[in-house]
Length: 180
Image (cartoon, rainbow, N blue to C red; front, side):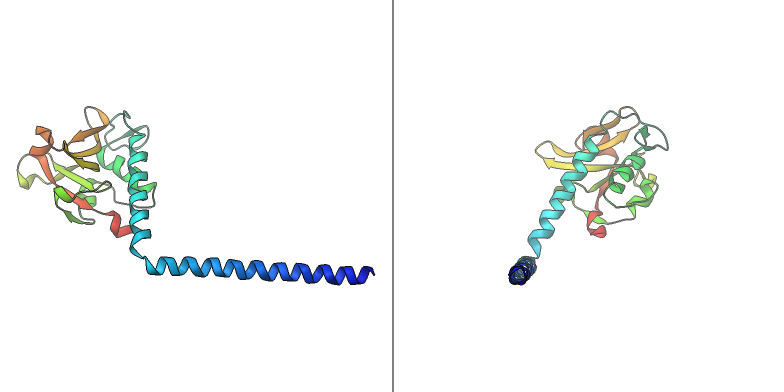
């Protein structure tokens, strides 16, 4: 009698295992079909999540002092700050803002999105080259809002419509697409 129960129990276990395998196959299959039918949605959602995560992480450093050549949370220069934030998300941008300026592609200011990089020059002349960088947070009625490490304030939030920044503005670049 014990042998019959043992065989019966084995059959039940085998049936359940088979049923679970079929169920997981159906779930995997339907998930793959869903992503194949709506390719754009998951990438848009993941892009938005990534840019929100970048913003949230960058804002954690508000108030950290400026340190020339700084690339750590003890103190940042502008490119050290941007590089540190993006590195957290698996994107290595380069050592300085001139290297970072070579990445990605140009974006019109009115089309800038969170996570885009914003560049400035020291002098007002276009020949003075890129010397400062920040991360776009948003574009709203007040203009383009960005976070950066400024020599006078450390990590802070500023607006492109500020007279100083608008006079030294070079452009906006999108680099996240290059890493996806």
